[in-house]
Image 1 (cartoon, rainbow, N blue to C red):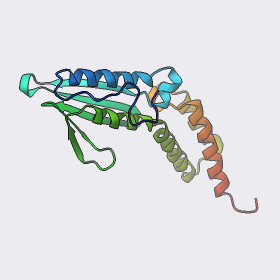
Image 2 (tube, rainbow, N blue to C red):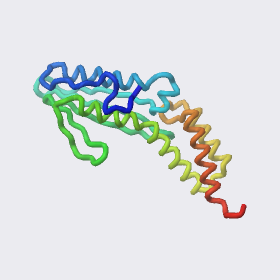
Image 3 (tube, helix red, strand yellow):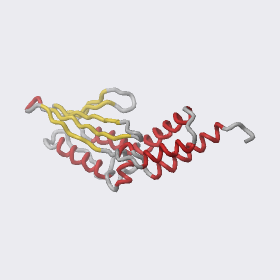
Amino acid sequence: MIGASDCFEGCSRVPSADPQTLAEFRQKLDDLVDSVSHPRERRIAYGNLRHEYSDWGSGDEASTNVAVIYETPGGSTVQINVTFEHGEFSYLDPHDGEKITVTDPHTPLQMIAHEVRDIPERRLARLREQIDTWCAEGLCQRDMFAEMNKLLQSDFLGGSITQRELKLGIKHAIDMRRAAEPSGR
């Protein structure tokens, strides 16, 4: 489980001179992703979080791209990329888009852990945005509930929603309708 600390359990600094830096980075990332993959309800809450390593070149030209991927309700995909090349990790800061290059694997692991920890709230915000759009389009509550039920039952794991998201989505839809009603009704 991802804690409130700056890094997830088991995350520690790995010396940059260690030839096993990338291997240890991989192991810690594997552990992080595994920590939110089971049971199914938890996996959905984290948008079917997964990751993939792509190795390119060899010798001095070797590089590895790490893609961490998840979905929001309805199926929009979000991807975080980290590249390991010439003993350095590079990635874009998720807040300002600036390129960050470091030799310490703790830094990108910490960034990924922070991003992963926030996935459930990002997913809920996305669901609320969709409900706001449905309200603006004039969908009645029954139709909105039917759309949310489709998301709940979706076979597309990351694009589906959890029971908690459904409950909070229904509450948001009801609150939106109440706010739209003329006073005195």
